Image (cartoon, rainbow, N blue to C red; front, side, top):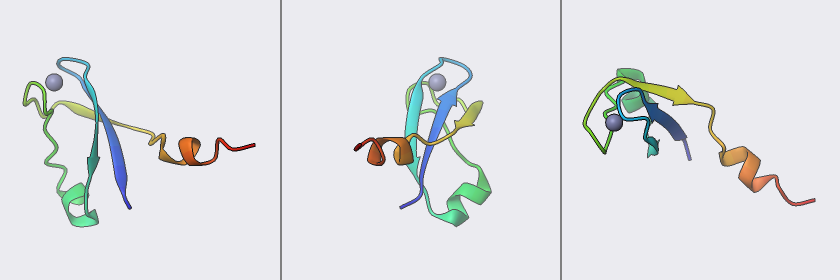
Length: 54
Ligand SMILES: [Zn+2]
């Protein structure tokens, strides 16, 4: 499942969005906290969490 992590450049809130490839390509991501579209995509931590078993 494509999970994308973003940080809002306006209020610094970090949030995750599950998007289809089409939605991701459109880039219409808005902060759920303040509604700003000034968001920066982070590297998803999804893989790190699932690979933490040693
Ligand atoms: Zn925000």
